[in-house]
Image (cartoon, rainbow, N blue to C red; front, side):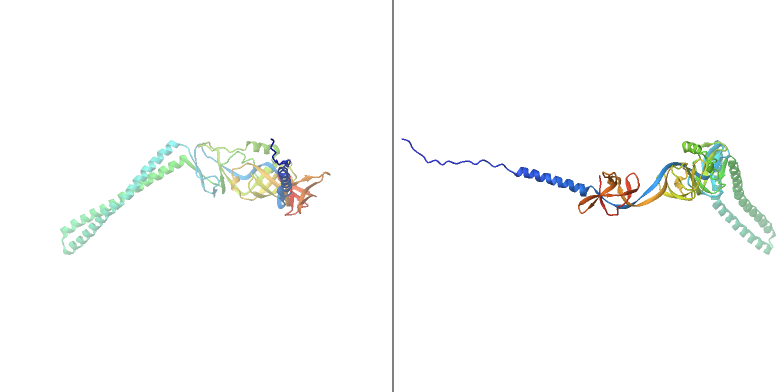
Length: 389
């Protein structure tokens, strides 16, 4: 017998495909795209500022000063009494040259011994003073006794007291003369040795006032301000190539320069200019990448060498002969932007992309002057926002 069961048939619907992943990917792409355009429009931008750029050129130059070399009078060992950069007056001791070092040491030893003896005698003056006071007291007592004996008619006593008084007086005289004579004799010996020492230890004094420099390169008699304007380009190069700082040894020869005295009130810069300069005009010059100084171009000679007069006191250039300089021809100010803000359109015109109200548009500009990184342009103002490459 068959049994029939009621069975319910369930029909399964096909599973729908999820749209979440494609939507997420699309949104992510849109966000990335928006970020890219945001960065392009707003992140890689620059706000225009006002700045300055100088037009200049660099050159090798030499320093010309009023310099007076000071020579050693004799052969010997030199001892400096001044330092480089020290200001001296006429008559200031500059250095000592010793012709006989062994004899000098012998004299110094003798002088030390004599000075010690003088000091000992002067220290013993205290004990001599006590003895002198005792003698003076004895003289006073003897004088009083002599007076009393004379008044009382004791003539035997008078003779004895007179003899005693004479003895005391002579003793006092010897005591006074002995100490003083010994000290004077020793001082006389000391003066004689000092005089002998001065003959082998010769001091050289400043004949002019100015600043001491220990940099003596041999060009002091060649690079003289009143003759330097005739220097040629070849001579200028020769000076530049050979200028070096010589070392001062312990021993010197007669007529060898030991140091020099510089008149620091005015000095000169000589160079071969790359660009046209105007005589009589003042220029700013930067030396060795240091601060700017003002100098007047007094002459350009037939060789094209320019000579600048400087009235600024620069101790830092005291020992310099060859320097690197930057001649500033002019300074320009205005809207300054980076070089990578300049674009060229399809027509070959230079300009910038200025950003206004979230949009960018091409704006032509006129470059005025540029340096290594920036350019000053006409056509923009401070505060403008522009696009960078």
